[in-house]
Image 1: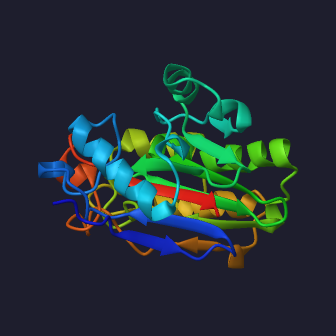
Image 2: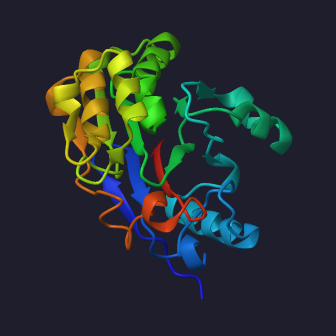
Length: 260
């Protein structure tokens, strides 16, 4: 029997629905249990279809208005506009290939990203009524993908960063994100303030949520407009997908945003 997906909702503004999915509700099985809508992680296609249907019912949209990219840990931002909505399924897949952030100003279109330890970031331009969903793994964080997202919104919609509301969603936190020297060195080489985002135990640990928060601040967002989820996916893998705990052959959290 299909169970209702359980979502964590974020308060970002009137008429804005913003959320992250949990592992609960839906019909996926094993390491994909229970709620997964990501097509690129090995889950059963029919279970994904049913889970998407269930989410669309909650959001009050049709399946063709639930948009998710095929992420590759880079910084490409895709704009979802009326032209995109006219594309065929194959054309949409091509347009969403290699994309790690989506933005739109359309009502009734849910854009979102998939994560399982990586950091999802949602942006809402309250002045121009536009939104962006960003996937920031450690590679995307090093490449400053959230900065690219803010810049893309500025170019497309005239966004002023000080008018943005940001929600950093569930992901792996400092205590659990142990990394090798090559990852630490990648941040050093890109000029990050390492004392602010790392600590040394037996190995280096990186604070991905804080690193993305600092990038948003540097982009011009105001401190009070940036919220950070307290959920560490690694520590709370019973409720949220964690690739480090469950393997990459497991489900993904979907963090989405739309205008009603």
